[in-house]
Length: 424
Image (tube, rainbow, N blue to C red; front, side, top):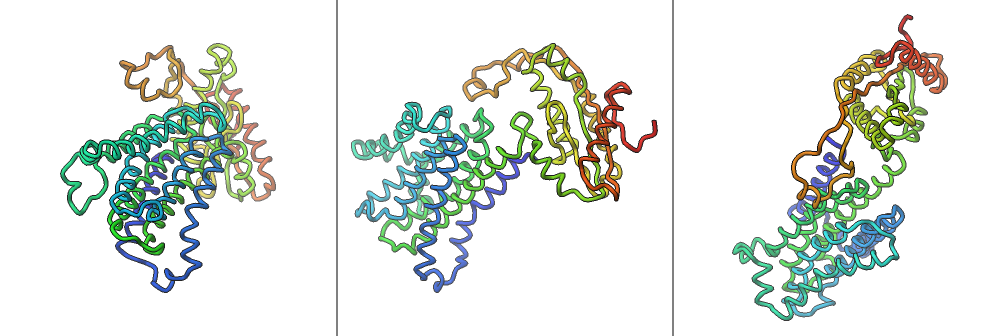
């Protein structure tokens, strides 16, 4: 299971918390009636969403910045809807419009490419993102019959169980397509979190429409606060993961980088083993086929090593990787390394004749057939394995021995694993 899929599952589980809170109230009336506690609950989503906006700005993701500020405005409206509109019917229509316009606005914000925060393109993105809200408000004011027919396409909306407009489903399907076909890997995790947050958001709108008939004090908005708090928590975690990836993941191969390796090496204790991995004839490959194809080779090798060895693989630098084995696994580290070498040896790398950018939704829909594959090339690796000893004080000594074993593997003809314990 990929890292994104695993976290998507975790987000989905967390997103059901508001439902459990609704049906199984965990907090006593005494705690809920405490003014300091209730004030903190109300402020928590504000603080979290503003923090997400700032962090998004700092990682040059203005789309995250604007979407977070939009959520702040929506949350403020839900909490203080009675202050905006006195008439229950008007409040209900406003909540319905927000329910449908929000995912459409997210789709517009994220389908456009990233830009600087204070730029014409960023301003255009914001104005276009507001259009769904403005269009539906105008539709309700000037053509209420069309509004009713458009928002409530199915008869089940007349039942007491569902109060959310039917068209909301289509709006979220559109946003789901934006998430799936997002070409940039950087905001992908955040988009997945936004998609998962649809569960507490729709729950929030459902509760708001149910409780819309009579004005409610702040504490009666508890379930709305919980829903937005859950949304804020998963979005905050998603953007903090973006920061972690920026610091500890190699941007090209998407495996942990040298800094992550150095910090891991400091924590190692005997027994452990280190494997230094080098792609054979990589410089010659770059000279013959170009650095773009060389980058594709690095990605393929990193993916193969990760599939074979798991999360113990790091990019050491250039065409070199490092794998760490601890505890009982350290004693036989050469076996999984030999298996990884064989796996890569049986694969074939094809030179690409098309551009290697991840296809956008438009490209996928308009491109016919499979991409043409070019010349077939075999990619191999040489591996040197070294083991720690009770007298080993520094991991640099083990790396030095592993490097020596790597050089022996190259001298012996490459495409093989040499251990420091092997006899010449």
